[in-house]
Image (tube, rainbow, N blue to C red; front, side, top):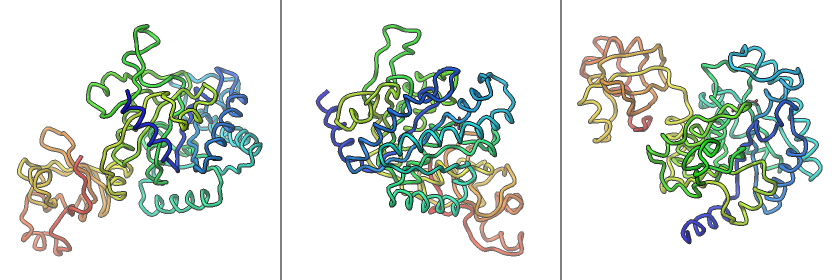
Length: 380
Ligand code: GLU
């Protein structure tokens, strides 16, 4: 217990740049749309921690829920995507207006930033977004980020705002991710069904058991469940940032956290922070295809630190271009690496299984020996 408190105290007192993710279930009250009182409390709590010299980036859901309430509708399974997208565009402006007012009351300016997965998957756009956010923070403005739902269809979505907030930690090089949920944290069982369920205050390592136990429980309005929060904890943990899940419906929970109080569930990060570009390859960029690698090739990549050569490739899947990210899988289909390719799918189709000395006679050119250079590869 002593160690837990010690860890907490240092993590929270040292954190300067914080991503705060707030879910729809916290911001909206059943079918009434946005809960103004809750948002006022949130603005007050964020202002308190900003007053301690911290920078806050808000990742806010609630657009779809707010928009649907305005239309007099409830979110249902199977609701057409275009209706959710229309609701998002109605709700997003209400959401921003509410933040504008409530943060303004504390002397803070806010800025709307809508992102799509494609924006972060493209390295140039990723770096542009990073510069914009940095400038907003330099001017003391609170960026309010959401997914650009009106143009995102399911296949290209972040999935949910838990995932988006994890990517924002990397994008802004933040020290900590706080997820404001409608539950106190991670429990040993689902507290809605099991009265003996206990809150887990600290997760030092995300084991398979923790992942399995998390379940997919979702609220009526949110998209993510506990599982998506745990996957996010893993992602930000690899980037050296801790994640804490707390109950955003409780007033003063943010200031309490930074006073070192033991609330919520804290996930400790990995001791060694992954390089930013490698983290982007591992977690942010979308994979455009798969390469099935034979056992010798897999061994060379995973245990010998080698680059991927054409000889190890058994099968090419997808229609990717030079520079795209692909996933390397073994013959059983298990993914073990990701990396940026130096040859396109159609070129690889011709040179797979061949020696590097054969590349130029088959393709008529040879720009590289490697298909994926070690520097552009991450072992998963
Ligand atoms: N972007 C969605 C919204 O603002 C929320 C997605 C989520 O809750 O994960 O309504």
